[in-house]
Amino acid sequence: MISVEAALGHLFDLMSPLGTEAVPLGAASGRVLAQPVTAHRDQPPFPTSVMDGYAVRSTDIRPGAVLRVVGEAAAGHEWSGALAPGAAVRIFTGAPVPSGADRVLIQEGATRDGETITVGPDPDTAPYIRAAGTDFRVGDRIMAPRRLKPSDLVLAAAMNAPHVICSRKPDVVVMSTGDELVMPGARPRPDQIIASNAFGLAALLENEGAVVRRLPIARDTCESLDTAFDLARGSDLIVTIGGASVGDHDLVKDVARTRGMTPSFYKVAMRPGKPLTAGMMGDTPLIGLPGNPVSAMVCGIIFVRPTLRAMMGLPAQAAPRHSATLASDIGPNGPREHYMRALLDGDAIRPFERQDSGLIGILAEANALLVRAPNAPALRAGSRVDYVAI
Ligand code: AMP
Ligand code: MG
Image (cartoon, rainbow, N blue to C red; front, side, top):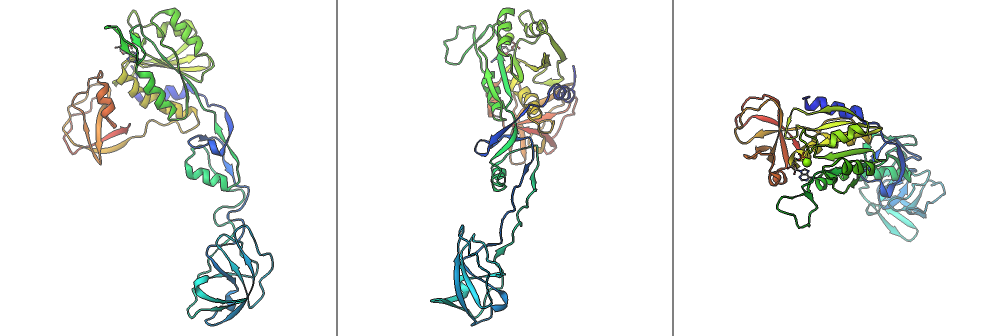
C-alpha cells in the first residue's frame, strides 16, 4: 500500500502532455491555454478621449476663453487635422484625440454658441485622455498555461488574436464493470444494482474539459472486458470502475495484464478508496477505480481530476486544500488517510456522523472532504483542519 501523495506522483509520471490545437475565441472559454497569446497592437491604439467634450490645447484654457470649433471626432471617425492654437474639436468618448490637443474639456465645462465655445468659470483640469499603449503594447503576452476565463478572452480579443492555442481536449473512456449492474431506468432484478458511478465521474471530468465516452457496462468475464478494452482504443486515458479487487470475479487487472498493461501501483492507504490501481496500457494510462460509488467519486476528485489537469498542461498539483474550523469533536484516525464527507458552512466544518462508504446520499449532501492524516489524533471542536472542496 502506498500513500496518497506517492500514488498521485506515480499518476503524474504516467501522463504525457496532450497535443495542441487552434481554438477560435468563441469556443475557448474554459479551455487550457497551451501557448502564450501575443498582442498584435497597442491598446488603446491611439490617444483616446474618455469623455464627451472638446479636444483643446491646455494653454488655451482659462475661464471665459472663446475657442473656434473646427471639426468633430467620434468613435471610429477621427478628425485628421492638427489642432491650431485657439481651436477646439468636438469629441466623443472613444474617439482619437487629434494631434496638437493635450486635453479634453468636458462638455459641461463650456457653453456652445454656433461655431464657438466659451470656457466656463471653473474648468476641470483633468486631461481625460487615455494615452496609446496604457493597457498593453505590441508583444505583451497572456502567459500559458492557464485555464481561460471570460476576462482572458476579452484580453485575447483586444490583442487581435482570433484564435488561441489550447491543449487538445482529452478523450477519456469511463468503463463500468460488473455482472450486477444495469442502467438507470431499467427494471432491475432483486439482485441487481444501478450503475451510477460513470455519470458522476463523467460529469467531474467533462467539467474539466474532457470528452468522456461512457462505454456499455462490461460484464465480469474476460471476453466482455476484452471487448470493452477494444472499444477504449485511441483514448487518452482509460478509467475503469470496479472489478479491481482480488475476488474471483475481479478480472479487470488480469485482462489488462494479458493486454500488456504495465502496472504502476495497486492499493493506496486511504479511506474510502483503497483498491485504486494504475498502469500503462501501451501508450494509454489506465486508472482503475474501486466500484464502490463513494470510493470511486472520492478517487475521482483526489486522483483523476488532478491527473487530467496535468495532462492538459496545468501544473501537476494535488486537489487544492483549504483550512476551516472543526465544528464538532472527532476521534483519532487509523493508519489510512481519511477523506470524511463534511458540510462546510462559512469557516465551520462538520463531518457527517455516518462515514460508511456505502452512503451515496451523504456524499451528495456533502460539500467538502475533511482530510485526516494517517494516525492523526482525536481533535476537539475549534481545531483547524484541512479540507478539499467538492
Ligand atoms: P467491485 O469493486 O467491482 O467489487 O464493486 C464494489 C461495489 O461497488 C459492489 O457493491 C458493486 O456492486 C458496486 N459497484 C461497482 N461498480 C459500480 C457502478 N458502476 N455503479 C454503482 N455501483 C457499482
Ligand atoms: Mg464488480
